[in-house]
Length: 593
Image (cartoon, rainbow, N blue to C red; front, side, top):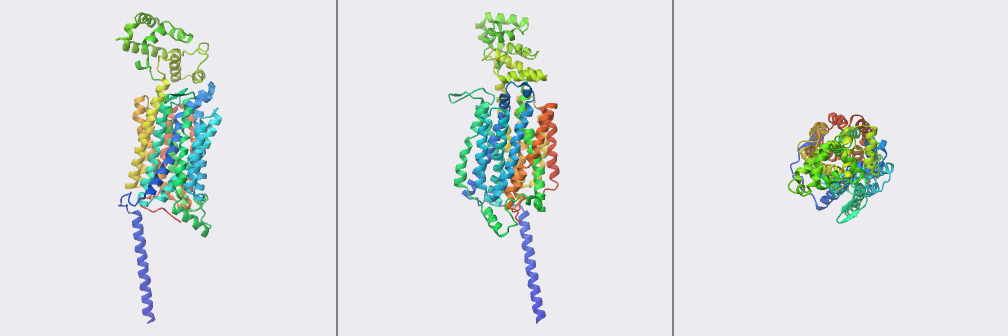
């Protein structure tokens, strides 16, 4: 009888073991098998609101970043004034201001990432929003490059904190089948913020000395007004605090902390002491460094690349706004500056100008287009010649022109001489020649808007590949594309047409990996460490990016922006190497410990 009972117990134990094994195998298959339900199945109205508000928080965050990218060159040229030696090394001041923001971004990302695990996701979003909008506005009140750089550092604190809080809130609030789409869309919609900033820079040119809008003239430089616009998103704090609530997963993790004191919320040390989370952190850092520096250290210098390319843009016939008045001004110059420029024209050109001046009526009619082209050709020859700058003639000029003249005196560059001569001709004949700076600003704004369109498409493309095929293949394809397209753009961009063709490709590739970060990083950590881990991986990489940015500035001064960008784009190889150890998370539940 005892033997029979023992057999029955053994059979029951074997049955239970077999059932557990089948259950575990089924669970494992469920985790790795592609989900076949619609990604939108079971999504509630509140969950849509979470995605919308969190996306807006990150969207306006990116708008603030882009406002800085569009305005920093004009801001520093204005703040450095007539300091010739500083203007000659403008790239270093640009990289210092950018590096300061990146440093603040890194500190804020880690700090607010930990606080989002301790305070909660919603409170952290509200604090970071007020931080980045407030210091964006203060940047418009800067009086020198030092306080401007300080405001960028403090603004970076809020910028860094928003991403971790927003992505963890979304990851923990939506169902698993919707997670990749929601997080990828959050990152993709951030490009709308970039588009808003680019559109704002078209309405408010950063290089303008004053801004006319809706019949009102604001007598402040355009770059200051742009930064003031960056304060408006602070209104988003109202729906954040009134609609959003902390996710259930975080509330449960906070309760478990009281029962398991060794499982601390937001423990930075656990990212490294625990073997599993240490591996996740190192992988996140490797992927993050590649994409972050590739974008901020190389790609976001695209506006400066366009400015470099268009410095040598020739005067076009359409740039001659009033050919008859210009011909008269060159023939009978009134001001000392006009006489100085007209005297540099060859004798043949002066003879024709005399003829034109005596037949103004005919020139204003059918011959106007021919006159425009002829004047443009003659002035282009003048602009291409020796420097027109004479400190006794051009004594009272805007700081940007005097700074450019001083920069040219310290270091001779053909493109700087051409730009200076063009601006001096414009100054000598105001209102008769279209300003080249307005043309450059227009091309930059248009190209960056196309860049942003490419960003949206690239991030949605990454989201689709990551959801259908997997996270690792999506990252691999994106890093290869980034490497090839970035080198091609920085070496080959020479004209406005090139900018309109290449910038969308650059945006498509470089921003695609950022959709991967928003999808992949939350899938690497448990709830109690998710905000800390995401914030650390997405933002600690900036500590490495800062010295690389400074190196980029020195390299740009030494070999030029084109070659510096092409060399530094090799950072994408690091991302490809990191993928060797990265695990595939497609189809798995969020991890817990």
